[in-house]
Length: 99
Image (cartoon, rainbow, N blue to C red; front, side):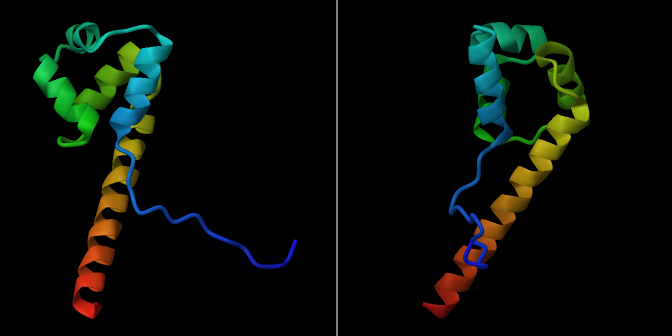
């Protein structure tokens, strides 16, 4: 150990949909099937997967029921994603003002 700690600071944010897609693959579940099981339209699910719409308390409870993780997990995953988007936006704003 050199005594210097490096922090990981990516210039991207991973939406909760990435985790949903991973679980879909594990369960061999299609988008259409998952949408049906969640009670969502396929269009709504696609937007959720992309991070274009947030996970709400209702959708978190549905994800808990269908995918097996807790609603708290999904809401926390959403909060972390939105926080990271805000950080990236602030960084971009700062760079455009300085640069």
